[in-house]
Length: 223
Image 1 (tube, helix red, strand yellow):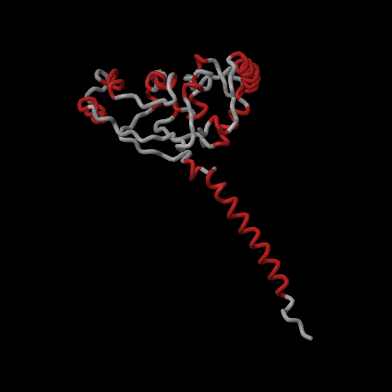
Image 2 (tube, rainbow, N blue to C red):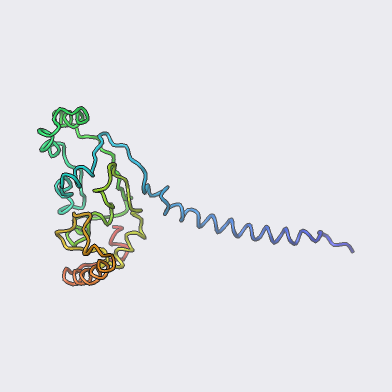
């Protein structure tokens, strides 16, 4: 009796089964990879703001401290956007008639806030408290990157769950003296090897002395 199916169907069946497994695995893995990619996190995406605010000029050149504009970061869950009145502390005298700052003057005169575009955003189901981190030696640079080197601010870090957990699992590697939190270019030592050794030594000490609670349970961030 002749075979019901020709021999090549065995190969075709194996290929179909392997293909089904690959496609099924891909369907599971692809969303996870996408969620961690810059396409989903927005990492590195340029953002057009209503006013060209150059952080390099204000922070690096003029030496304005992060906490001067984002003063809420030390006492509130939110860093906040500075009110226009704070901008006018300088610009009522400096470049007071510059056409590039027309929107700033208009906002100050009318009381209508400048429509800044938020860059660093976490999902609504994630709780993050700036003051808890800032007051325990976690520098702005850990989450925001070297803002002092950016002409236009962009999201430098992925701000993903794994990104946060990496820090919580080893807080000593990310803690510095409290008075250096807003000094974005600061290092323990210009020598990379010495800097790493001092980070471990003093970071471990600060974790102990400041009683840093590096929580990793779900309720720490999902409340």
